[in-house]
Amino acid sequence: MPTDRHSLQNEEELATTIGLYVLGEISLGKAAERTGVTRWEMEEILQEAGVELRLGPLTKDDLDDEIDVALDIE
Image (cartoon, rainbow, N blue to C red; front, side, top):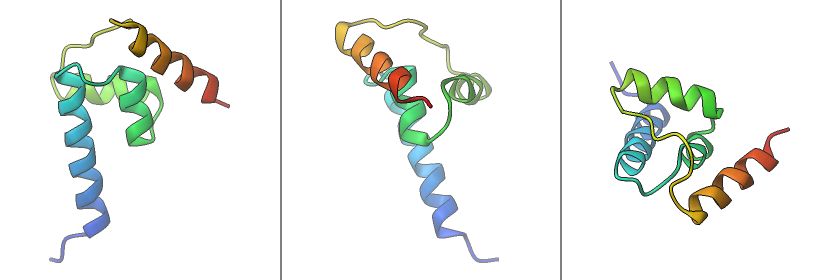
């Protein structure tokens, strides 16, 4: 059965995003933005992957990212 190239790219992007989140390189909001899901959906994805959530910004840059994502929600 042929592999859906778009699906594989999405899985790779999700894996990369989860990795960046685990390493503390991006915030929960930025992870959600990168994968095109809501913050709450990203929480579920991370929990299902067994990742411990870091709730709340750790740095001013994280806070700025969270604000940017929040202001972009329509």
